[in-house]
Image (tube, rainbow, N blue to C red; front, side, top):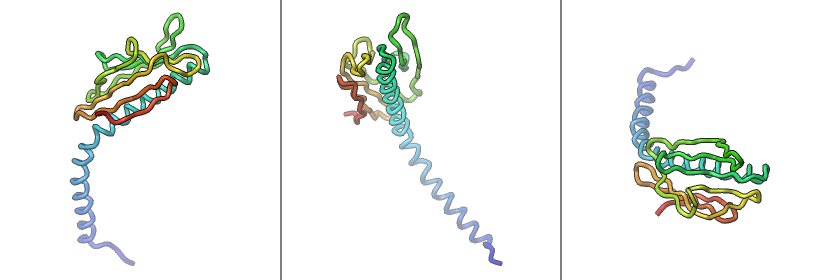
Length: 146
């Protein structure tokens, strides 16, 4: 019967410890960018969801962005207006700018197109920006910021 010696086990534990010490600071460096990417993808997903709701229900839906409260709402533009989802950005993320949309609202018509094209700029605490570009057809795309 073969077994590991105490020395072999200590060497393996030491290697795991060294790798952990190296990888934790690297992860902390990339964590804000990963979080920014995740929030941008979630916002794009909600934009596409509001577009799909507009088409299936034949009622305008959209996203209203509040740069002061750092949140956005998925809305159904009926009478009265209905809030479907409210999402708040994490502490280290913010809306840098919203351009091209009246009242910071991306509104989809029942055909899936938007009233106005524009851009939503997200920034993290490290200064990294992503741009969510909304085209007139309703097509949504994430780009790296300048």
